[in-house]
Image (tube, one colour):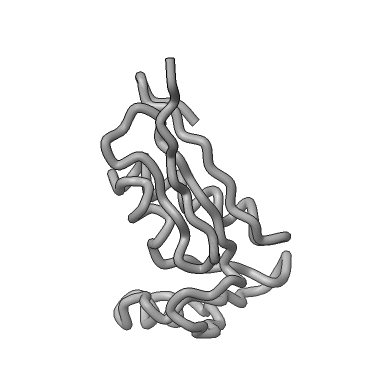
Amino acid sequence: MERGDEHIGFGIMGGLNQPLAHGQFVSNFVDFGMNIQAALEARRFTRQTASGNDVSIESRIPSRTLEQLTARSHEISIRRAYKQEMGRGQAILHDSATGAASDPRADGAAIPEPTSL
């Protein structure tokens, strides 16, 4: 993903959830102005079926949001604060002072190494 001189390489594993997790990461970064670490750590939701109103959602979602979703007929399943079911990934922002991000749902780390020119 690119924005001006910023180049971001990212990937979020998660099977059927992968497109949702990618969309949520991109939206957090682009629409909500989060840095890449905050965008990876942000609360996520997923769906296990192609139809219906079921939504699995991490417990860090505010209760007001859960109430609004329930009022709109969503069937909510609350998951742990950081659930691998929501996907887990890494991201690196090229030419940034913050450099890299690692998802707390995964056991990896994104650590940029200096290059010799």
